[in-house]
Length: 176
Image (cartoon, rainbow, N blue to C red; front, side):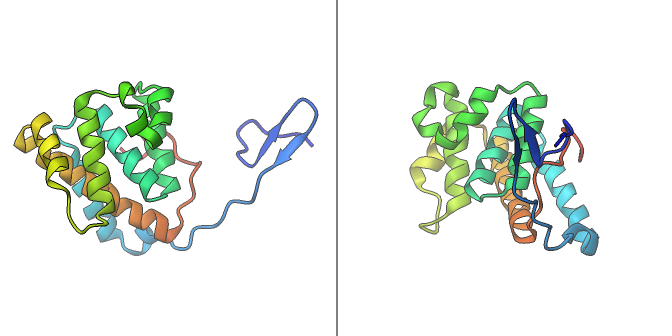
């Protein structure tokens, strides 16, 4: 069997071809059926990212998407981060950032910890020490933007996971 280099479902090796599982279809093209909500989310996204460092912004979006198991958003934000010059190593280590602290700045670590606290909310609140650490590294206006960015990616994740949006087709910058 001959494979196409851009076909994500098969990979040719020196001796065999590997067949990957079929891509699951999306449950619902929610943006098509709720275009006003989609447009509002795009505006909210644009407002939330204002004034935030692009690298930090993408790290936060990837980490929240990992926690929420949103494969579509992990695919998108990983590709955007790589296209913007982020290292593969730092992206790979995000899933274990607390064990890989030396890959990140103190400011990034505070943002990642805040991202986890806002995303999970298992105790129903963001712990005071997590908030205080973030407040130590971000001015109030920037902290407000960071909280907004974390909140927005969590909303996008809910759409992606619920509607089962398929990863693998996004091209860097596609929705900008």
